[in-house]
Image (cartoon, rainbow, N blue to C red):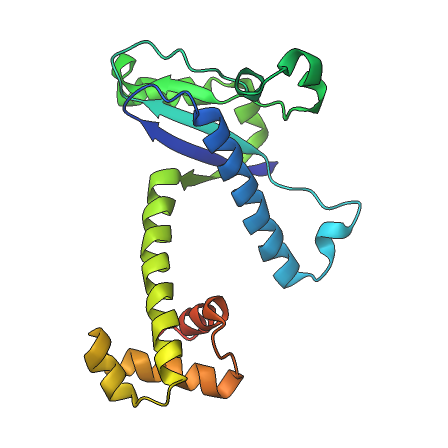
Length: 198
């Protein structure tokens, strides 16, 4: 038995570019999986046996208009008839929430024949990930500012007052920068902060 990832996107209206959004999210999921596996086993993604987890894209549609957006990427690419064999080929599962109750929605998913192959699945909620991304982005911007001001020789307490950020947090960033000689490597500092659960 295998695991798969359910990619969940919510739409309140017809979105004609949703297929391209889904492609971006699928690549993001696979890249994240690859990085996780590489952290555990260096070079594993370059081996013949390495495989990425299957992703089931699901669009929950809450609108009242009929959904008429393309279900394949071919419908969004010029000259698709001539280039169809070179365009990524995938579909998404469309579930119109207004047509089903909760129990019926579950049945709709379980009735998909390929679902019987899996004993476990993980959900990737696009809206949830987007909010996390926004929060992380704001924090990384703060780290960047702290690093720039630290480089000018400012005291951590003054930086805290200037930016309105807790002094303990500023001191922790300063400590990570000094101990690891990370300077302005924002992603590395961010990872160190949460590795140590500050």
